[in-house]
Length: 111
Length: 114
Image (cartoon, rainbow over all chains, first blue to last red):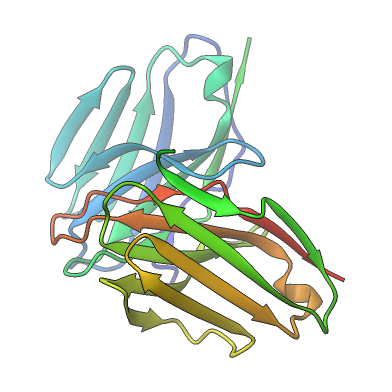
């Protein structure tokens, strides 16, 4: 079992729709969760972090965490073509920060 | 200059060459990392340095040799690489804490071994 699993996609949504990206993790001791956006040929950029169960909103982005189900998701409202990228889920297992990444989900937003 | 800077951006080297990748962070962070990113695979953690001390070496072949002379600089020395080592090498930094604030990545070095 992979430590962090994501559907590789691509996930295709029309402009203006809600994009829902999902991630599961295997280590119940995980404490911090992150979403990174990576454009083609560029390095990952941190867009959201979440540490406790529930929802966390930042602009058009909402991160959701359910530790009982070992599940974290990212919702992007009013999706724009500029949101087209690969979204990486990362998990910190606690203590010294060492992030484990999923393979990423490729999102395509069509005009 | 701000953030995390990596040089060079692109590197082509032969299997018998020796080269070094450089990373510099201007964020006052106390931890630095090397990751390898290959196509269709998740980011692979290679080395972790905290306060200039190596705290993790993820079974990386000895042809990769890290160096952290101070908390702002990190190097990855390369020698006798193999074609399968071709990848994007990413440096990152963070402020170490149990809460975890995520990393800031550099732009990466695209390495091609011929």
